[in-house]
Amino acid sequence: MIGERIREIRHERGMTAKELADKSNVTQGYISQIERDIINPSMSVLSRIAVTLGVPIVALLAQKEQSTVNVIKKEKRTKIKFADVNLEYDFLTPYGRDKSPEAQMEVVEYRLAPKSWGSIDMMLHPQCAECSFVLEGTLEYHVGDEVYTVNAGDCLYLPPAMPHQLYNPGDVEVRVIGAITPPCF
Image (tube, rainbow, N blue to C red):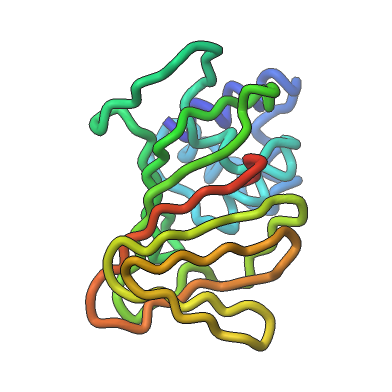
């Protein structure tokens, strides 16, 4: 699924697999395996591919956007698990690559394994605000030098342009509903 979208966007850009590989700092064989859905790329590789293709990461992951009311059945939601982070994403809203005005937010449910970080590096959404509501467990938001602890039932709002990292300090998986606006995953 990810591979199919990468290939589709690469073709739209008139780019060869070798060009994408070179600009994304991976081998052509690696791109080929991704595009054939043989392997799942790491978050860092997916991020480099998205930058090279000039699209947000979510454009490589999510459903095509529709201009009508959508009911997204549980079994039809886009689900993503990256190879290099302990986060699993379940997209609750449809999202398309066209960035049309209809795409006003992203809502995801994500899960973070016990005693693990959500990413290797700080995440930064320069123009996107996010809100996280913890359903189960405890989540730490590391924002600059501050640590904010968010327990089940608590909510954290993060303004745009604040570098942050997520950490699950507990012994159980943490479940969170997150909203990002405008979409910028």
